[in-house]
Amino acid sequence: MTEVNLLVFQVIEDSLKMQQDMTKLLEAVKEETLYVPIAEAERLSGMDKRSIRYYAQTKTIRTKDINPSVKLYHVEDVMNLKSKRRTVNS
Image (cartoon, rainbow, N blue to C red; front, side, top):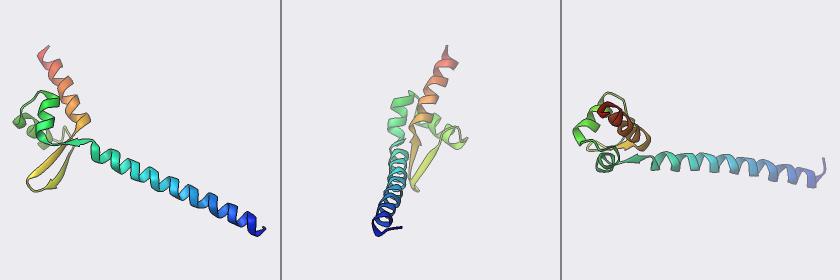
């Protein structure tokens, strides 16, 4: 291979690595924004804190512990609680 071909190959390899790194970063950002504090979970689901904590304790909804006194709740799971609530109340 010529020196130019080796350089082109290296640029392509570096680009692929950068693309993989960016994909990982975007996934991390996406994952971080999918969690909300309990007040927001209450608003989104229409349920009280006690009910939300119950569902978190039974692993019905995903949580993320920020520190011992702060827990965040997964938005998609909270929204699913809202639809379950409608089904039960119908």
